[in-house]
Image (cartoon, rainbow, N blue to C red; front, top):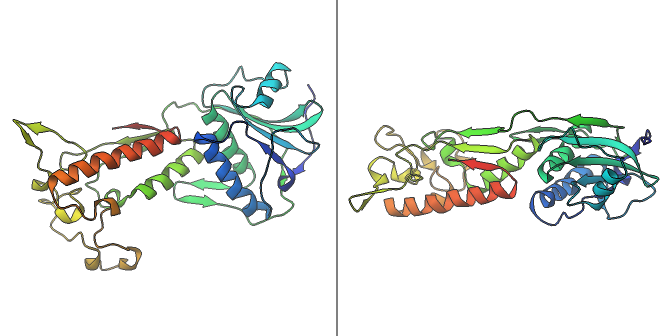
Amino acid sequence: MPHETSNHALRDAVWMLGEDRDGILGWARRQIECWVPKLTGSQARFGDRLGSGLSIVCGTAERNASVKRALEQGVLDMTELGDDDFILEQTILESKPVLMIAGRTVRAAVYGICGLFERLGCTFLISGDRLPPLEPTLEVPVLNEIEHTDSSWRGIWFGGYCFVANAMFSLPDYEAMFDQMIKLKMNRIVFYHFSQEPFIDYTFKGERKLVGDISHPDSGYISYGREFTGSWLVKDLPVGREKFDREKLCPPEFQDIKSSAEALDTAKAFMRKIMVMAREREIGVWT
């Protein structure tokens, strides 16, 4: 099949994401809506039909009819792909120029979308995005690539809330981190909990664990009490107090906890919400 060899302006391209209303494809659409204006000064364009200009077709055969037709017509070949591998291929589909961003799984296709923006000059870090200067005439390069992801587990080891930095993470902080993890093709987060934290709950002879015996109340009962004798209050910070809009260093979700039992209940709900946010981004949680 013939391959498209012309460059096209990103601002004029039409994105075809298929069934993009929920899950990780919905997340990808929101990122495209954010990135394209910052790169080109124009709003991203979306559609469901091939046009005369470049169509950027993203997804899987199951979720995008154009990907399915490309496979059926021999325009696209995904036989070499693993579950998290993706194709970036500029070609011709039904006499129209297309850039196919496709994978066997939706997650792989989303990795491919992020991969395209990397090739447009974006740098993704766990701390945030680094985008190139705005360029209204920015062109989509001619691509014919397959990117393999060799390791099945790729992610972050989150080693215990006993460490001060970890103990400040709120749910919005986790959400921001999960967003960056997708862009970096990470698919796992591992939590290693210690006994003094409220994330491990148990009873012994009818008595529930008393996390307050070993964790500091001002840390939201999250971090060391006996071994760490300093302050967990923002007012006692010698540097950086202006960065906090709360009384204690612990996450907002743990600010008003008054007892060991309340800490255990809050931590269970907190961790479950983390797992839901991760799963929405197809990131597995190991605890």
